[in-house]
Length: 265
Image (tube, rainbow, N blue to C red; front, top):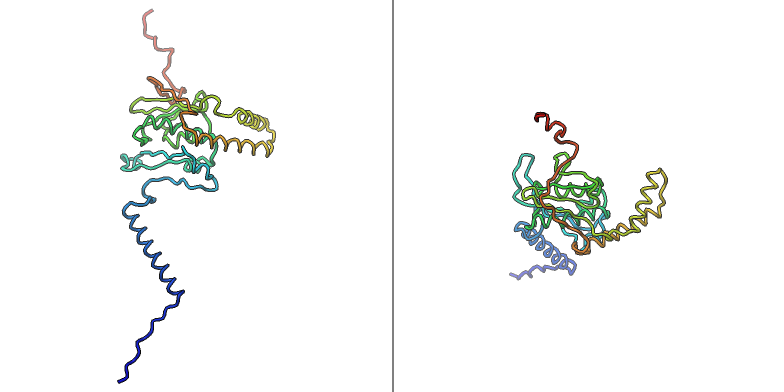
């Protein structure tokens, strides 16, 4: 009986290249999934913040030397206990909540973050253990409320314009408190003058030129870059406050004109 020739398995060069690529992709997927399940790669379950550049969050901010996230501890639910894990709050999170990235928010972030490192030296901020004092400014109030958890309605955030462009932060459990603000001269005078001009014009109902707005925004970005890339101790004044007593408001208090009503004449 005549022997039949064995079948020829012919694979084209293109087919070989496809198989190699397919195998590499498959092995990479298996490897990546393995890392995720073993905690080798940061995932959406580890509480990390997102610091990637975006249209509202420029690369110079994301890459800034002293733009570091803040680790915070909260409770599990409305009636919950302390969470077993922490989460991060970053500058990009603030930009989303506040509406934009600006120099006021950066000033507040740098000031608050620096003081929190003193109040919580272990690196984890307990947002149930803080009270704060801030001026009535959108950048300042938004930042301090978001980062510290202090709220006006819970009487843990005091609005006081005498705080200026700084804050008072206090850890309730220890009583430790600090006043923080920019050192004199850090905020550029020409920027302050231009901002005052713009606000005055608008308060009078007068228009502002596009040129002035563009100049202010450019100045603000340059200041933000400086603040995020300068060691905090070079730009901030931080003063410990001994025996500081936090008051949520001065609207309420004890009546002073009746304390002696029963004293003898």
